Image 1 (cartoon, rainbow, N blue to C red):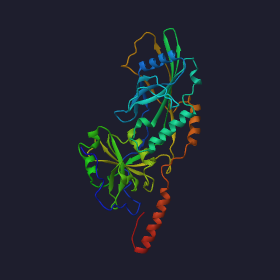
Image 2 (tube, helix red, strand yellow):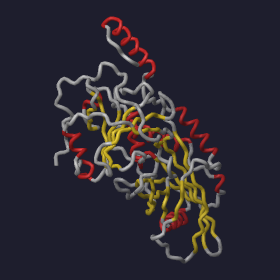
Image 3 (tube, helix red, strand yellow):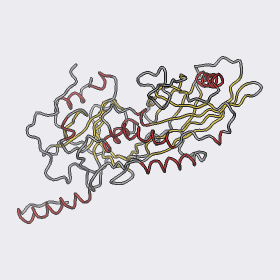
Length: 399
């Protein structure tokens, strides 16, 4: 199946001359919030075998060298959160040209977790999971992934590290486990609005069909939206050259059930911070459009979306942590059928020192703003233009 769709055969293409009242903003439903952990805290499901292998490797090595835990991150079936399944251990290896150890057997799509095991019995409260260099690399990786043209992967919007401090007892080992993750704190709120006409291009017809591109390829798809002078939406693929030359008003997604899916949140971040987008056009109140081709609806759903922070938000970061003690008995065969469950939370008081380091490091990064203009200023300019046109040409415009 040829998945390359021409966006439009209309030549030339013109954006509406006025950037006011591009669509009807009247809400037809309740407000919905978008963030990775808004509806459910990120879950970790860790196999006992992976923890035992990390402990055994550290006892044999006795140098406290970093190792790795490997797994996969998936969006939950109800799309209210994400689950990270950690089921493998990798001792890592040194490469001459690299300053840090790298995994020996990671596969494409693996979620990589650097880990340290402290055999010397260091108190768990004395352990800092992330140092300044760790935070710096994590923030740069998050910023790069949000701003780049790479495939948008929710797993790359969560940078996780682990510390394991074992204490041997008569019948087993007590493991003090610390999980610390850095993610983006930017959130959005959206409300459903009335349908907006869509230009029936090949891409739009495919997305409205019973077997669209996302179902054929078995993964969600997303792209961008512009608008012609008749105020109809034109859907664009993410790779379409028009993305960098036309004003954009929002994003479309297919292969997703609910708008509150973490994948929608990730696409909103990409839209706001992508370095390949030259011009974003917002409504008078600072909203952009989301068109969702849901797996459970025949017709597309339309939403207005607004960044919660401000009209000119910067990239903001958040620390998610978990600290628990796990007792594993000696001479018991580890079971892979019942993984150990953890939750990453932003409310932990044990990570105040790391949160302070994160705050300092984030302030040293180059400022990455989502938009380079204030919608209110632009709208004021447009109102002046329309007012002068009204006086000169006798037109009636209601703002």
